[in-house]
Length: 109
Image (cartoon, rainbow, N blue to C red):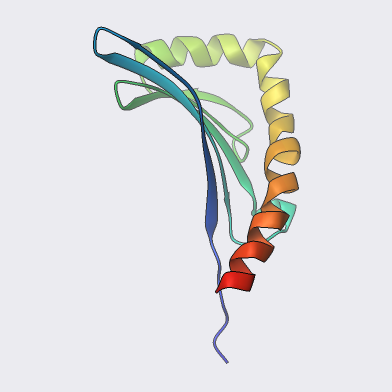
């Protein structure tokens, strides 16, 4: 009997700022293939003009910068209370909603 693997991603756009054609936005997302908390990954990313410059990943546990500006911000965020808040977001944001979405997806498949 073939096993069924279901993978979902919760994706929510938080903020969008534009000025003279430049765009900055942040995205929260949950990546999961079961309802087990260890299988759930929380990612919070900041983008500028379609380029990700800083990201928090629950599997890494801290902010990581991908550009010079992102490295500067990652260092600042990792030294402040933001990193502790982001570590708690997986439980508050993902684990709470994943069970609902997972059951809905299985019911419709």
